[in-house]
Length: 108
Length: 115
Image (cartoon, rainbow over all chains, first blue to last red; front, side):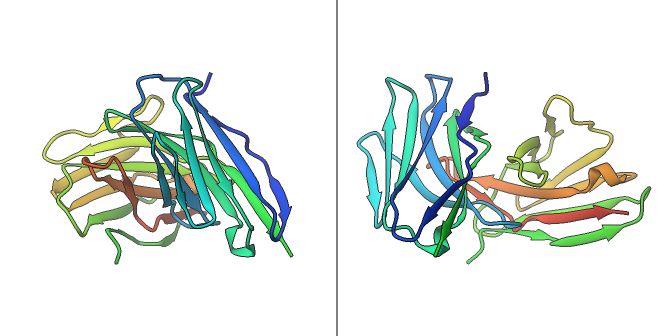
């Protein structure tokens, strides 16, 4: 079993749609969690950290469920510019583990 | 501004040559830097952890004699792909980590094509 698992997609959604990604992790001692965005042929960039209480940044909402060991990312009112690969990253003692990424394409 | 600068962004070389990629931490001193490789439509794969002043720690399956890492200062790590072959063609990315928050900052990546 992989340490961090994501549905690879692709998710193809129309503009304005709401889309959700889930990510599960196997190590219960994991300490912090992140969602990164990676555009084609570019480096990953931090989208948002994921806090235990859940957090929201504009159209993006991240949630953490430690009991079930998963994190989620919700994107509301999708824009064309949201098209990218979203990476789930899990940190334990500064050892970062990456999911394979979920590819999202938002279409007009 | 950029926290991590990586150079070159793109390199094309002949099979058998060696290629050096530099990774510079611009905003803070990094005792540790990370090197990743990413094949098309695949996830980032950690290759090695570069440690300032000591030997790098390589992930299982990564040849240390093939991928030479030098971390000569707190702001610079280099990855040298020795005797490159077409199967080494990939996107190589470095990163540094903010140890307080855990956040990773990535370089812009270096796309290597070996002919």
